[in-house]
Length: 207
Image 1: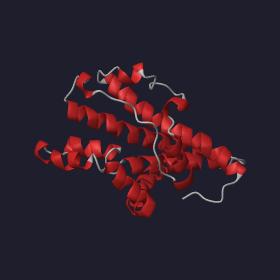
Image 2: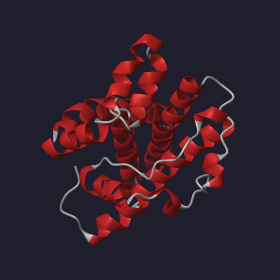
Image 3: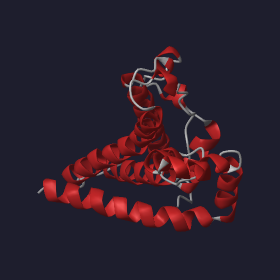
């Protein structure tokens, strides 16, 4: 997705990536904490400091390919005040939803300030793109991505073995999808739908 790097583009993309992964992981931790798990707070993950959430490889992929990941928030569902499987679904869903919300705010600001010169419109357009692609990537139902936990929360208990049987092979499957480029064929349709919703709603609200 992103090529022909320039200093100007890097100056825009680095803060955009840090914003995207920070809000994604903070949302995971905050929901887990609200459900009763103190682990994210104890480990310092309820913060807007991007260093606490940074995974170097995942951040690099976000810069180069438009999708990637951050350092996962550790969660202990045995602390949850709700059903553990549903709780994990809520925690998993929080990350992509946070990115979609950040993208929507970016789209609103872009429509407001698009006549400005300089890097402001570029920065805001990348805020939308990177956050949407991060959300779409994490919605893939492949362990350990959020989509697998969301699916586990939706499936009947009798079908959970399908998800659990993939957990040991999930990272390998994911790397194969990335290396072969097949991930794009899955992510792009999801991202296009999300982008059309975000841009459409933002355009409707900003005259």
